[in-house]
Amino acid sequence: MMPYRILLLIFAFTLAMPPRPGSSGPDPIFPPGVEVPGENKLKGFRFLETVCILMQFPDNRADTIRHSAARFDSMLYSTGVYRNQPYRAGSLRDYFLENSYGQYTVLGGVAGNRWFLSQYNYSRYYDGNYMLSTGAQLARENLQQVDQYVDFREFDRNGDNRIDACFMVHAGPGGEDTRNVNHCWSHAIPSFTYQTNDGVTIYGVTNVPEINLVTPSLDTTLCCIAVMCHELGHLVGLPDLYDPSRNTWGIGYWGLMGYGAWGAGGNTPWSPSHMEAWSKVQAGFVTPTLITQDTFNLRILDIETNPVCYKVWRSGLNTETCFYLENRQKKGFDTPLPGPGLLIWHIDPAQGSYHNIVDLEEDSTFHLDRGTGVRPDPHYYHEALGDTSDPLPGIWQRFVFDNNTKPNSRNRVNQPTNVGVRNIRMVGDTIICDITLSATVKDVGVLAISAPIGTIDSGRIVTPACTLYNFGTTTESYSVRMKIGSFYDTIATVTNHPPVSKYYLTFPTWATNQPSGTYLVACSTSLTGDMNNTNNKALDSFTIRGSVGITEKDERYLKIEPNPTKGSATIYYQPPKKDIVLLKIYNVSGEIISQKRLENGVCLIEKLPAGVYFLIFASQREKEEKKLIVIK
Image (cartoon, rainbow, N blue to C red; front, side, top):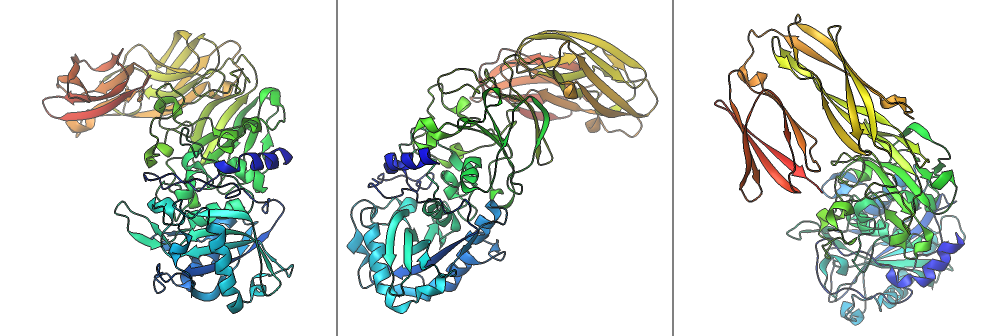
């Protein structure tokens, strides 16, 4: 832990509550000492003692009826009841209990059970910089005014004459929400101390708002818990994990100490993202399991409900520089996340600033940064801070992470670590994958049987096909066997299949002249030296039925693979009887790129530039549109 404490002092100026995604306005200037994370009050602790103070001002009044002390008390300290209503997914206490798997409880209450009225105007603290230079003064003067009315021993449950954190709630919204320099930007001051009249000392304060703006029309509601959780994170030792310069993205929506402070869904501040794996390790909520050798069919449970993550680095070494693997699912406070899957974090303490120490390797930079290494939108419009392509396999169906993928598992000076995460798939809410530590890996497998599947009319001509994948590091040639029932058994050869890529293999056609019924399909690969035989075989089934009573619409079959693609795609189709199908391909400008008449079976589309295309399939009876995405 010592290297991290040194860094806290060096990089204090980089720490801040992120602005509301999509907002614009003057950037705050954070003075030294503001937002420096405090001592770690998470690891080894079972509870945290806090107090909440509500303060309004003669020139800035609170809505004391709708935003009563009782509502704040419920929002912060209730258990299991602050939910099932608009803008409520659980209390702050619920959030920390869920992240700690029931091991860490935030205690406290609202001082005086009421709103206090300051003797000073809110404008007293205007500094042209979101009250960041006057925040400590605001907190101290508020405490001095309420001290005579509050017995702070009430909040010192263990009698050690200290309160670990103070929520100083000011009337109105926060500057991070409105981008108005005369609104207090939410911030924490862990070094703040105040000795009360009761002999109890408060260690650390955070200035937070009464209300949030929660809709595009900026409707207001009682302050949601996300900003409270984020700022409390600073008071108990967690740093910011986003880039205040807005040149890079930090961890985006994937963690509380980044833009997850605005909610797992980007504009869901009532449901903040879980802490990401590194923060949970720092908090002592999770102990990572070290991978020291090649491991196949590793099952990674969701981190929302299981204290599970894995750590891996070159040759299985146990070093501070490493990758953390965590399985994120849309559960609990993480329900609004962009999507589920495997997140791979590159941890490198030598990088200095925390948003570089904790780097989401498998984020969507590879298709958003336009080759510059920096994403293009400097204002952090919320869709770009997290999407369904960030986790693996994600919508892009990326099954491998290794030295040569993009992003890759190389170190910061582009040297290979030989760490490979392969054959990544999600079964239910569990991630299953293979971890390899060798420079050379031989591994091919069957992703799916593409045909025959589903229901097929008797007498049809079918082209059996399968989708293969090279999970390894070298170009491979190998054989593939397709077996259908007891009447079809053929072996085909795949030649020069590049690493980390799909291959769509078709077999000789077959006429469905067998009796009606359900039949088994088996497809398997055979590669000399294959290091992982668990993915070599796929099983499926299909049904042959008679033609009586079958509607023409039921007879149509259409599928495009892969989609998205890197330049070519295969269309598997079966038009209604006696229909001629015309395929037209349009670009996003509405221009026809290609058109062709389709024959029953398989059609290959090749050499399309990167972009979005619309495929129109038209017959005498019906029309259907499909979207095809081509990536670089």
